[in-house]
Image 1 (cartoon, chains in turn brown, green):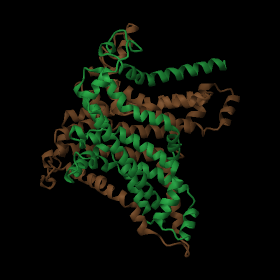
Image 2: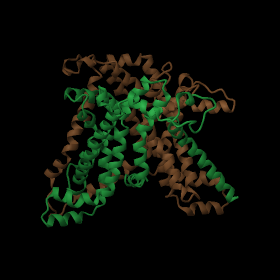
Image 3: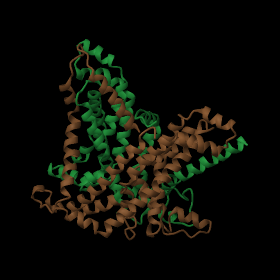
Image 4: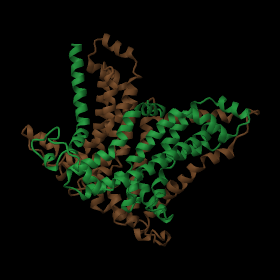
Length: 314
Length: 271
């Protein structure tokens, strides 16, 4: 949303400068390049070059031992990609990632929307307090959270199963059970991220005109009907933004399983990014880069789709 | 009816806060309990006896001082570099009538879109072939000028009237002088925001420092904690103390400076 808005702003600016008056001051192009030089240098060295190198690397047999002499590697054509599509572990990682994105995104957006709705009406000074509290997990180190939650979800000593035990429920082994491990990560991730969506929704709710609510009220609409007929349509852009932005991030999730489960048990929490990271750890750079290229393609395709979805007036 | 509704709303908000804050509180209180007490059933809320043993044995098992120093050095360099370099790009994009400005901004957006994992291997190969593996320079290099910083600064500087810059030019000031003496002082609020966001991102950053730092004396706090958690799987108290040490600086900073953060989210146009 932000990107789209500023794109248009810069387009306007461009149009204005296109019609230059003859007495306009000279362009300061030299200075401008100089001011951009540090960015361009870092971009060229750490983003453009690695991106191109990464795309090429996927077609080679490069291993960690080739780092000292990267140009001595052999081109192997599509071999890495062929191997990729027959690799059960990689397929498992892809399905896990898909499940994770599809489950976590709506949960995060719904929790963020719920919190924003509760905070938006009739809460006075405490509003700032609750907003701050709900936002804290989002700014906390993911490693700190992952380590704490791993202990929290411990089958015996963890707080969750102890609390369940107090009401007579025998809790599952969570991260040690291949049926509950990934859902546990889904809940933890929604817990960590919903505060961001909440802030976006709170800002968006400011833009819903009071008159609309009052008119609906006069027409006899109840709270739920007003939410469905007035609030939800007005929040559509914000919901789409949160959904797309979150989903793009969740597609790359990896720190949580890396620290909490190492991708196990039985690969049940192995994400696409973690599987690629493991190839990197094993020194198989070419294969890892090929898998990264596939992930990149999926994310780019999703980004293009997002521009269509986020286009206003639709 | 209204009063009942308000009560329900407060109950829901408080329950939500308990779910969000619960794990933090459990970690904090647990870091002062013995391992036996953490595992006890039913669980205790406050420690039976407050002990600092977990923190002292944390100092023995993890090089907290070195890791904190490394995190501070990395964050310091990254924050200073972003404040300066992102502002320079933003100045060129908004105040210098720069023909290639749209191209440069396009690169900024592109950098924002490329997923970290795609760059990880080739970035590491680049850093390693420059001889910068296992150095501070290698850790900070990819984060020196972040797209979000350019975005934020550009948004803010676009609002500063061009007349101020023109007036300074008429007075004969050069562009560097105008940038440092006129424009940058006007950007103080957004610089505070950018500094805060960059500091938090750098302090919490994990994967890249974990890949570049190969010896314990280069570990940042999250890397040291992740490493500790793989070694000390059974020592809950020590791990909880480690979590508290790693997360507290950012949480304190955020609570104290959150108004700058809210401004930042508004400036970035996430309305």
